[in-house]
Amino acid sequence: MTTPFRSEPLYRAAELRQIELLAAEQPLMERAGLAAADLGGSLCRSQGGAVLILAGPGNNGGDAFVAGRLLRQRGFAVSVVFTGDQDRLPQDAAVAYRRFDDDGGSALSSIPSGPRWSLIVDGLFGIGLQRPIGGRYAELVSAINALARRDHCPLLALDCPSGLDADTGKLCGVAVRASHTLTFIAGKPGLYTADGPDHCGVISVAALDLDAEHLAPAAARSIGSDLFASCLHARARNTHKGSNGSAGVLGGASSMVGAAFLAGRAALRLGSGRVYLGLIDPQAPAIDPLQPELMLRRGDALLATALTALACGPGMGRGDAARALLEQACTLDIPLLFDADALNLLAADSRLQQTVAARRVATLLTPHPSEAARLLACDTADVQTDRGGAALAIAARYQAVVVLKGCGTIVATPDGRWFVNTTGNPGLASAGTGDVLSGLIVALLAQAWPALEAALAGVHLHGAAADDSVADGHGPVGLTAGEIIDNARACLNRWIAHGR
Image (cartoon, rainbow, N blue to C red):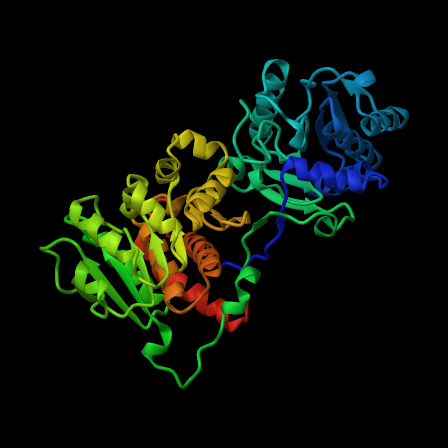
């Protein structure tokens, strides 16, 4: 059973540097090294075991020297491999080096071949990396990855796994695959999105006795249930179906009706009082035999229905009929969600783009990376290189709340706020899960949730439901979109019952 997460601030490297400057009089490196020694010692398989530490040429290396000194004092057999030049270390790191040396430690130039390691610590680069890792550093990264596998020992990264961009989650050549990451002061967005989750392992934050948000506001946050807790209301006993909104799903072209069914079923189970499907396929069925509560009709009839929110795109196709219906939908004075082919139609039509950007009612766009690239007229690789930046660019261009799907889904707003989701697993990389997400979000919109809160809750809930499925033994391999729906309903009711 997934426990609700609390939102935390996330900072890019440049923002962290400003916070460090504001706290320059405080012993941050000593605190960071102490936190690393505490966590590293607890991860060691045996008291007094062999610990390998890589210390880099900058302040991350200084943190590593402090941790090495303290672990030696606690009885561990510490080997520190130093890759820099003592005379070129930053001031605080130079002090940490000397204290390690004065305490009896000895910096090595290469990894000893004898020990079986109980713990390996990556203190090479942290968040300071500016270019791809190569040469000797690449060899060291590959070596500690291999040693951690060989010895089945924890690999602890300090601040950020070396080779991972802490701002974006993209890889800078070869990168450390940590089992644990201890990040300092506050979280960084790249730890939670793109390649970050595959390289960070279990992430812990050591605040170093600072209140980062007091020193500098954060533009980014992780998604937690506290961000939408004000919308988690228990229903009044004196209620009826009309009290809970009417959600519509426009889509279901030939051979793709199932996508609309998945979205509609998700909307129904997440509490929309009525759910209508407007199906484009002229041969579409008149009823969903597995969910007869759904009301099926033609697309034009759906747009004439009194809806409180509408999702456009699941199984929609890109034909003339779909385009005409989408243009008509944009004139409705209700929240709209664009997904799948509705996004592709939008990306290909400059006039429709202007219409969407000028809407006075909430618009939500839920692209995957390739759809996001079409919306920005760029390559998918450009989107994945900076997922946060791409989501913000789409939000500003289309004046919409944007959900950029993928590992560490990003939610962004036109005013520059953005959020990174931490729930979910590889089971969501299967057909139809995006349609389910559309259904979850449109159900919340139909129930009068504000657009941002609906997006945040839908994304967080979608991932949490998939996590519960895996916990129950139903994935991640072979997890299907339809299986997520009932778990999403259970999660939402549990969160409402707990008041969060």
